[in-house]
Length: 214
Length: 233
Image (tube, rainbow over all chains, first blue to last red; front, side, top):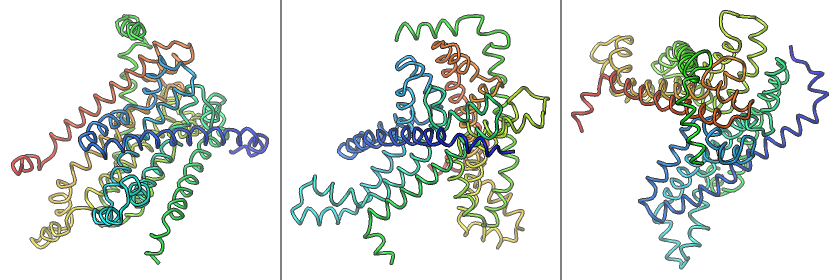
């Protein structure tokens, strides 16, 4: 049922689609992380801002993805990378802001006060104490955002972008199972690999947690 | 931009978009029908299993991996894979692409329903079920008299989440030739008609909101413990 010959003779295309799919996903999660960080800093500095920020990002999260693409069409055009990126980024915000804020807030007060007592500035406490301790929560958010985004990037073919979605769309057009399967399995495998990579990154970045467990 | 939104407004006002095969009522009906059949099928398959596993307190690992796998599998990919497969068996009782979309939507709807129903029953305070057993209730009575009423809000929330996701994603059926509100988006992109694309997206978004609000209302109506919860507050 699966045409292995087609796969063998299209390895170059598959590799190129893999790189494009990864590029779109990494770009969206990367921009999402930067925006979420800024929003989280605002929410941590002014507590009253947290409610409105999660409300707005929550509304963005509930807009159906294809509907969001169509809403961006009059702004960026039918086949712009930004029609795809703005939609993808807006889906990462809620989960990332929630995890960043919860992670920073979960750092015990006595730890922050001990750092203050040692004469550390607030900025340095944030960078060297709060942020590293919040890292597991932040990476947990990035994992969900990344897996969701990799799945959604299959839809960006609708707005003229590349990636695995192209195989799915062409597989549908030619009624050719192998091609659609390559796109689908590719996206699932990428999600699994990226998820495992983020787990490994977390372990590498938080050596103290490992020592405690041992 | 204002000019564009004016054109969208005119599009919705055009009588031609309210009649025939490509009319809003017809496409809305197909969209809702396909969504409802998928959600109902997923509920019939997923809920009994989830309730039974929750009742016997087994299968926690299954619940977790189901959510993760569900998140990683793209619906568009499933539709694409099942489209050629279902054509092979030629079930022609429905329009082209119906069964491929149906299977993908059932797969999309099952994880949130399963997990909510499972955790809803699993997370009930064991003291309550033990008290019920101590009063002489049988396993079945504990399930129907204690566990299900307590878990109902979470079960319903799972159905609502699944339904909203399905209503949003059924849009993709247009790409395999089965009409839904997604037909406007699909045809609009093919004809480079931005107004039609936008109008289709708006229709889908509005239907999602209506689904969310309607099922939220049903959720409150059927909650047997709602009077008690209100009094406590």
